[in-house]
Image (cartoon, rainbow, N blue to C red):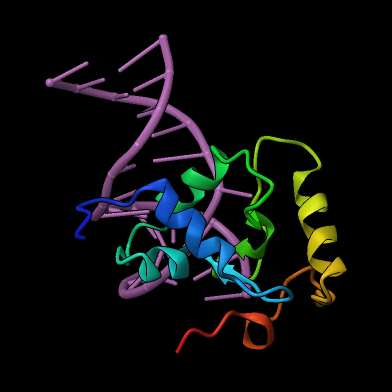
Length: 105
DNA sequence: TCGGTGACGCGTT
DNA sequence: GAACGCGCCACCG
C-alpha cells in the first residue's frame, strides 16, 4: 500500500503500539507513518479522536511537554494517566524523553 | 476557491 | 534557553 497522505487509522494503530509506561512525540508518530514533517496532522487526528482504545495520552510534543488545548483540565488528566503508568515528570513538569521515549529501532 | 485555525517541529536569532 | 518564522495540511465558514 502506498497512501499519499496521512490518514487517521494509521496514526491510531501506531499510537496503540506505544508500550505502557512510554511516550512518543507527535513528530515521531508522523515519521513512523512515513510522513516526517506532518506532526501537526497527528495532533489534529488525536484532537478528533473519541476512542478509549487509543492511548492518546502517551503522545506529547518534542520538548517533553503536554501540549495545551481548548479543553480545560485535559492537560492535568493526561499527566495523571501517565503517572499512573509509572511515568515520572521532572520538577519543571516535563517528561524526560531520554528515559521514557518509545524506542523503535 | 480562500483564509484562519490547530493536541507540532525545526532552524535561526 | 526563549521567542519567532515558516513548513505541513485537514477542516470549516
